[in-house]
Length: 103
Image 1 (spheres, rainbow, N blue to C red):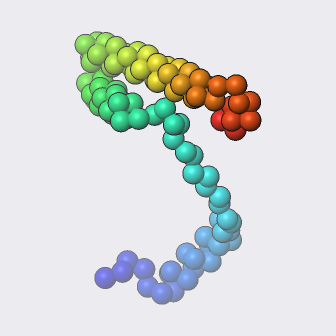
Image 2: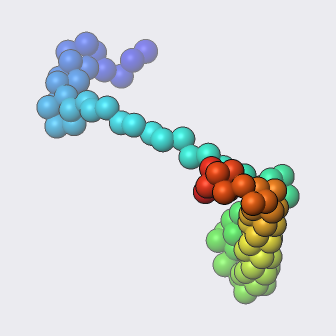
Image 3: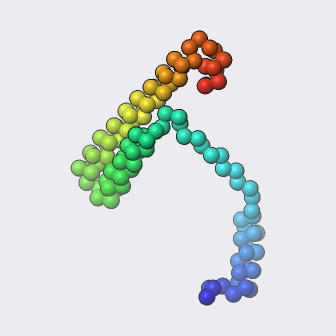
């Protein structure tokens, strides 16, 4: 059973239209970075899990574990980024058109 009868729904709908008119929202899909692979996803999930545990318990031990994991995640991401771009740039060789297409 609905909690609003049609009269209340009509009034509510009118108020919503008046104070919050509809407008089009564009959402751009953000492509994942090409270097972000399964290792990165696994590491990020582990970091989120430890962050959640820390926020739930608020203990120094939980905080320390989360911070160590976060530092490890940052290091992994940096390594993946550098490795990807080094390989990509090397693969372009002296072909400047191919290099500019990557940038």
